[in-house]
Length: 374
Image 1 (cartoon, rainbow, N blue to C red):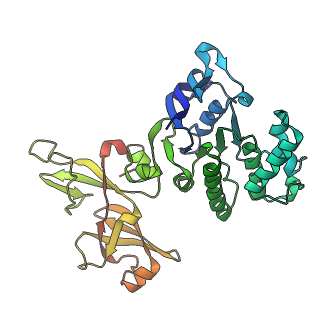
Image 2 (cartoon, one colour):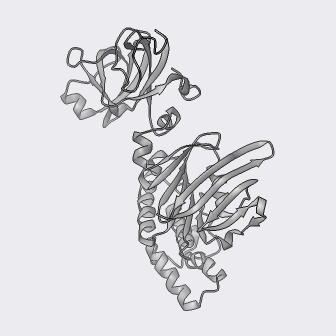
Image 3 (tube, rainbow, N blue to C red):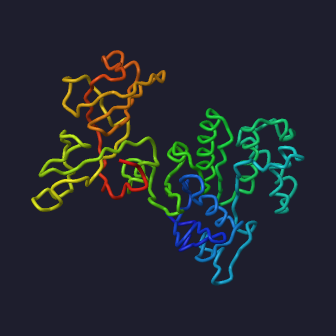
């Protein structure tokens, strides 16, 4: 698949604050690509650099094989000449213009003929589910409808690249879910390349063909498909950021791997040399990471596993959420309430239990520094 956007060794700072340093990224033609990371990590800054609202201090940005930003070469193409559309978090629709005029605005700037403009605007308004509302002002629309107007305005000129800066943040949960599927459907229908910025892992997983996970320093920790990012995290930061994560400390004692500060054994990681002298005889060496959904909880004696004590049992309606202590370390697991009721797994605080695991990720304990406390 052909690359549409290339970001090469880009650097950007504001005063003494370095936002990006030597950042490189490529986005393919026709894909929905998401920048995912915590607030303040520089996602929006990178989006604005690609859009042309900001200029990099160093590096080069190309769109469709054309260099649009290159400080060393004196290149800085203005946003209106980059062939893109953009939707902001706060909608940014013109309050004094009707829906029709808001959507028509970029087409008027492009001097499109009146009939073609009218046809394109009405087609795009219908495309975002706003047919019949073209004469309304933004003050007469809900937040979700205003965001649809902003999306229609960005799509009206049929840009090769659509930039979306956390466009669903101000919407309620049900509308967010509805809109993210609509955006995906529009992207596929128009075959437009989308660059989406969000801190919401669920939105990123639902929308993306590929995504890049950024940390608080602006560094890209991993790029891949949603499945690759979730199931094959490159490091503890990615694993921890992509959803509720458990980490249990594991130490080596001879040829055994023991959990926490106790003597319960866990299966050795498959790629670690257990030959004598391959590592210190004892001490915290690794940690196993797993999701609450990867934990099976059972009554003592019912299954083989690690013995634990339920420290907190929380009824969440459809789910039972348990905090379990295993030899001084804690983990969370969840089970559907109907399954807990039918299987005799309605534990109370202080009850003994047994836990086992469906999937484990092994991490070097040193890499967890700054990610999670063990």
